[in-house]
Structure formats: C-alpha cells, structure tokens
Length: 346
Image 1 (cartoon, rainbow, N blue to C red):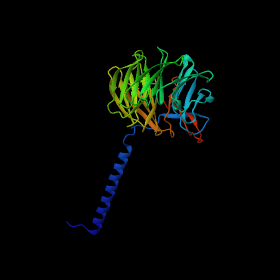
Image 2: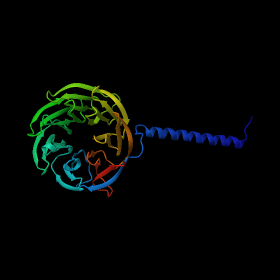
Image 3: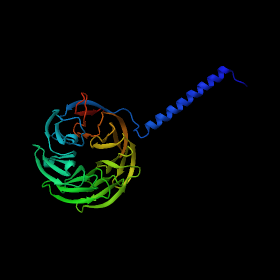
Image 4: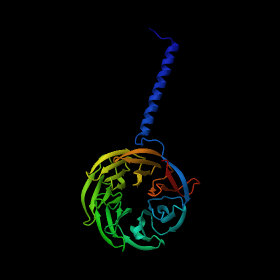
C-alpha cells in the first residue's frame, strides 16, 4: 500500500524525534555514570562562621568534641584556624605552618598536630595557647595524621614519599619510618586490633601495620578501587570505609575477613571522610563539591542522600555530641571564606 506525501512527511518527522530522544538518553546516561544514586542531601544549614584570610584552599579539620573546638587547616594561607563551634566564633589563627594539610587534635594531650607540607614537618601546637611546641622532620609531602594512644605516637602519611613517619607525641622525636612501596593515602588507628591501617593508593590496597614492630603484617586488596585515598574506621563493627578518588567509589571493608563487602558511588574525587559513630552515619566530601551521606545498617552502608553543598567543599568534620557536620569553604553565602554548619534532617 503506497503512502501519501503527508503521511511520508509525518513518518520522517516522527523518526527524527525518536532519534533525537535516543541521543538525549545516551547523553543523560553517560553524564550520570559515576554519580551516587540517592535523593537530596538530608541536611539543613544551621549556621555559618566567617573565616579569616584569603579565599584559598582549606584542607583537613579536627574537632575536640568535649570543648567544641574545631581546628581547620587553611592550606593556602599556611595557617591553622581555631573555631569555637558552640559559640560560633574564631578563637585564634595560628600562623607559620607552611602549606598545612593534615590537622589532628588530641584532647588527652591538649595538643594539636599539623603537617607542614611545605617544610616536610610535623608541627605540635599547644591546644590552649596555639604556641608551637615542637617541629619534627617527616618524609616527602606529609598529609594525613593518626594517633596511637597506646604508644603515644603520631603517624604521619608521607604521600609522595610512600611512607609513614612515626613521631613521639610528647617529645617530637622521630621513632621510625615504615616504607609502603607506593604513594600513600590516609592512615587510621584500629583500637580493636591494635593496628595501624594505611591506604596505599599507589597499589590500591590497605596496609595493616604492627605499631610496635613498625612492620607491614598484611595487605588487603581493594578490588574495584582506583587510588584509595580517604579512610574512616568503625572499630565496633570492625569496618573500614575507603574512598577511591580515581573512580568516585566508596568501599566498605570487613576488617576481620579482609573482604570488601560493599561498594557505593559517591561524588567525583572523594577526599575527606567523617564517621559519626553514634549515629552510624558516614559523610563523604568530594573535590567536585557534592557531599554524600550514607547510613550503616547491619554492617552495610546505603546512600541516604547526596547533593552539591558548595564549591570546594571537600573537607568535613562531624560532632558526635550534636551530630552536626562542618565544612570549611573558600566562599560562603557572601563569597568570603566560611565554615558551614549543617544538621541532619532526621
């Protein structure tokens, strides 16, 4: 049966629409690859503290939850900023910490430790006054930090140096170095096993180190991970959460079996992780700006929500008392550096 000219035109037009829709679907599908599948961010803003200094990069932050004091590494300014998060004010600015990346407050010692990456040093500060107490040499490009309370030792990740420097927290003396055979990500102390865990991002594995022997006892492979950098631990549930910044993936690792028992998509280039032990909630802040919130049930994570919080919101700290989370960013609502405070919707 032959078609009329009008019918042929209608069919051609319909075909063009189908092709256009198909192309659009492919574009949307490709654009969504690697993004977390979740609803909106389950947080709401409750405050914002103006931060001093220029609108340059911030890095890690560490909270003394009992006193409500948050210490923020202002990498671009070479300063550590101390903020009273309960009074919503800046307490002091501690200068001369060259290219500061990592910062870790140890309330039991009344000390704050910071990695001066520009000088390849660990700087120990008095939590009460901000005074510099000691400077210790590290390996190349010191970044993240962890504290071993049983031995009173600070572990410093030397990212490009591929090692950990172990430093006496009281005296600042170097106790030893652990070579890890590849570029290193973050480090954490597991009190349940009395072991140090280190992301070896150059090998895509998790190194388990004896803190007394300073020897690598085993390596946990991380299938599906590209460049493991971020690390947070849940000692009571015997879990490690590992962020792979090369492929926007979060792995849950069973520390007892050494097996990966969960994989979740997060924002591109995930960086800092913060785990709220009491709420069983994990926050993943990404270089690309989105924050992903995951909740733990029966030792399994699920994405509760994800959303764009602010540009460069790649740092997060969480208060286990109030369950509020904090994000230092170069530009707050008025375009100036700020500490954003969020609370859970439920």
